[in-house]
Length: 294
Image 1 (tube, one colour):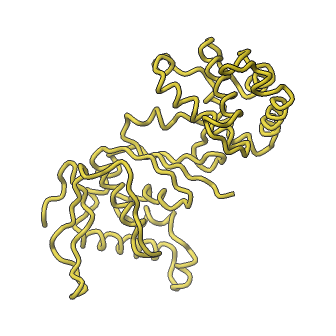
Image 2 (cartoon, helix red, strand yellow):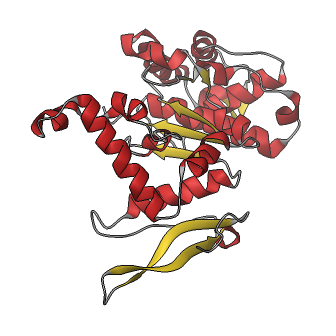
Image 3 (tube, helix red, strand yellow):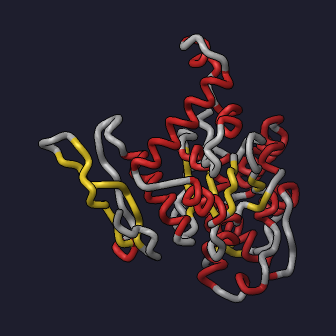
């Protein structure tokens, strides 16, 4: 077996002999230096797209490359089901007991068969419990579920707090923070807003920028009040009333107030700040963002 435990080399499996329909001994290794900023994985249903991406992610974390995963379907969180000892006790809480009943065996027996299947299957690919343990120890794993309490919550409320000086003093970082916060808030209101063309986006961004530079934190109630009475008198070359009349600002404030009053919105007020992406970039972590389709 070739050595695939090299820093920066991703082990993706073995080469396949199409004519014989069998695996070769040659390993398929991918140099992480060939990774680009953007990529797309295309293939028919069931062709192995998800399996390939999971393999890439596992190899990345073994090499201490952090990952942020946005997972609308909820599939990739299964990466956390990595059991170093490959014992039935590790599999038992996660098996489908209906499958065990259909086979006429107990849940314990079915879990033992699953453990053996995975142990033998991984061994065929040159991987053992030690490599699984290395994967588990290479990073922390966190599942965020925005708008839900199923995993770690993400709080949009804390995003209105005045950022640390390192961000306030960097125009690019500050612009990015404001743009991300305002875009996310408007999305919750059902408003698809362009940061350059949308009056709503420009107004809320101006309120955040002015409040933060005045040393103020905002909560949602304070934001609603600031929409009706902004901390600025002009936006660009226009006076505030010409740019965004008070009657229309009140309508926007009402939309935000309805959001705050909605019973289901409470899950957006708890948990970690929305800037979790920024704070995790320099750490070796797997952050899963499961987005509900409801």
